[in-house]
Length: 261
Image 1 (spheres, rainbow, N blue to C red):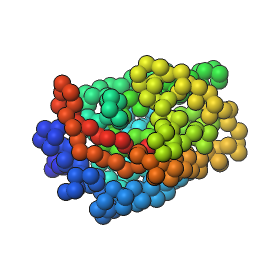
Image 2: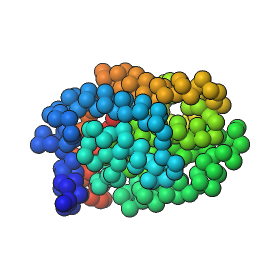
Image 3: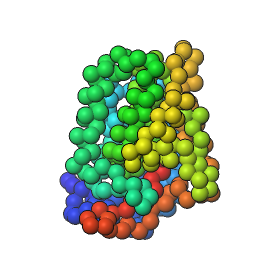
């Protein structure tokens, strides 16, 4: 049976993701406000992230692998965990993500490129950071899910880095405060407009050769940086904001507002 976010035109599908208040995503935890949902989601997703690293990740880094990661992280929160979004979304005024018909082809192409390098094992170590930055940028532009893309992308890239014996230290990423963008948000925004230099620089700083001890630390770092970033932004504008959708100029798409990272 079709679910509310799978039927009707895009406006109907958009509304299908939301509760009656038009702001809170339908959820499995009984949250009735964005703030209640944020608190429950933060706790449950962080717990799932730890078990994800402990018990392993998908062997492939294509669309199926990314969906598996998202499903594992968000299975306690959303019925649609692991499902590709059915609406067009954007971040900010001009930051449109991939159209619906380009999400899967984009990630499949990324997966094929990764497979051709034996999950980056054949890539020279000094090229790993820039390669990861490129992959991260493409996954971010695809933005396959209605919510939770940032957290899923970090797990995806962290796992891929491990395949080639590298470690991603997300604690080195500068978080946003107040109206100031986080380093990751700014670098990703610039990369989406054709300037990947800031994103490459960020990955060159946070990616290192891994030793045995760093794998133990890695099990906690992506969660910690995500939590730190969200807490720092609670006084700002980018935590749980889902504004009234607006029509896209010249098209039918609606505004997803600012997704939680």
